[in-house]
Image (cartoon, rainbow, N blue to C red; front, side, top):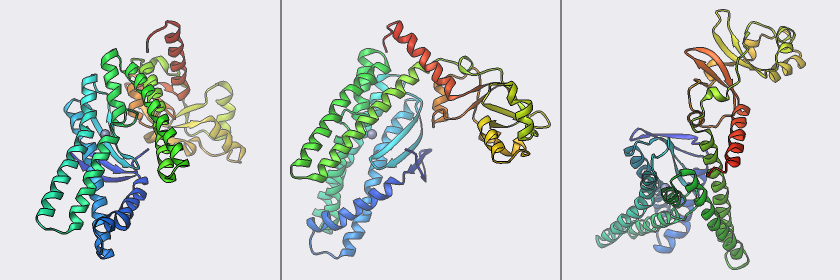
Length: 381
Ligand SMILES: [Zn+2]
């Protein structure tokens, strides 16, 4: 899930939202304007309902942001940088650049979110009481009560002990504290989360046969979502632990064959490709500088579609778009830095000199080997 629209920065943290949010924003406004407000305060004009509803939806997302910002502020206080906050269908996600150094810090960063939501609920309810005592429009106090209920539910819902909810993370830090390793903590928390996810799916399925079909589907869908999020969390933690303190140098392919970017497709196939088994070739320009990277299958495709005389430099991905690393960098740090995961080749440079190439296959090989070593030695994970 990526943030697609940038809103700006708060406390130096990039705030964005995902397209899925627009749909939910419309749904929230619509349900407020058509159902919630007319039921609470009858006989108002449609315009009054809609204006209050849209304001309510905006404030609601402000509350979600407050929840996420509380995570971010505490994270930064404890030395964990936050790269961005994205609001989406199920609320917000704070993207941490790095990991908390202890179970206690992780628990602290996590618990403030639900606490912030519950605090917002209390404040909104207090305001509703004040506003209605002061004789303001019933629409305003009704909206405030709605905000209080929603924030309270948000705080409580987030405490369900399943990833990616705060409750799952809280449980994981508890088991981290008990067992001494983060990976063990995540493993146990994911198992517990599964029970809750299956319960939600089960109750959702029962609801389908009883009164409320929509709630049933929604609950089952949420359960399924929590189930897959738990598996994703577990596998990413396992991979991270396996790649911890493995330097790029141990995984990369070396030496690297570079070719001139002035070669044509046919020249390359006749003079270079036949001599090597590589699938990726970094290019050098006339001055000997790295200018880009070409893939063998791309060159072969070009040849079969008649582009025999095209220069390699015209087919290459330019250097500016090629991720680079150093031999000493940790694979775990590298994967975190690349964000999208390793889905393309990374050039390994040592003091500006090309010393290797790292491919997803290289990383997968290291993961498999370390996994095999770990199970044979009976090492606890
Ligand atoms: Zn949270």
